[in-house]
Length: 240
Image 1 (tube, rainbow, N blue to C red):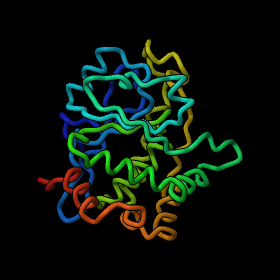
Image 2 (image 1 turned 30 degrees about the horizontal axis):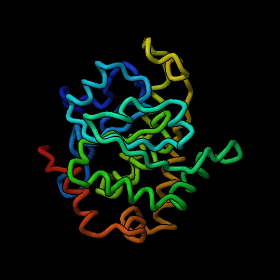
Image 3 (image 1 turned 45 degrees about the horizontal axis):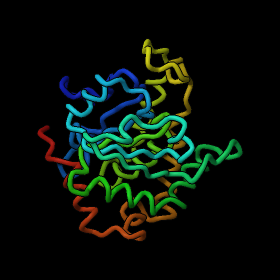
Image 4 (image 1 turned 180 degrees about the horizontal axis):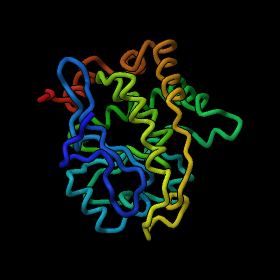
């Protein structure tokens, strides 16, 4: 699908590797997701002042950090004490699930045990001043991937499109980047696992076990009106 030049999906900012816009996706009934409204990212711990200012200039009003507390202590977000945007820590896992779990296991674990946190994320997005927002974790792939997949699916984005969005992380990590701020592992060429079947299985599990994204959110406290507000805020008529 084509992307307008003024709205490139990958937002290239110093200090980030995987900062992306999830706008422009079909959302059913002649709508699409809004550009520059919901972003997804890797950790925002190394952004220089110019990158921070550019994000704020794009309209950013909230940062939702999905990392667990130890990660926040080791690599705090540059926005943690910001006066310009709201910083919201919502750990999507209680701790590192460990090497004995496959990615598919971890994605199911998040959907099965962290629904309360997923509802909290949605409520944060639809709160006054909650958008535009950026949601992120360490690589912007797994915890962020499950969260963004749930949100996109909840507003009507088709499975194939959600899966394709998830897979973009592998492309963005594939080549070494010249960024003096990324002196950690993110600066190197990294092979990350974004197999389409992994996200597709997670979405299948979401349907089979939880009745789909809206039902999972409703069963854990969200209301129909709140789901409707999420769709209103994240989608718009598709001019195409």
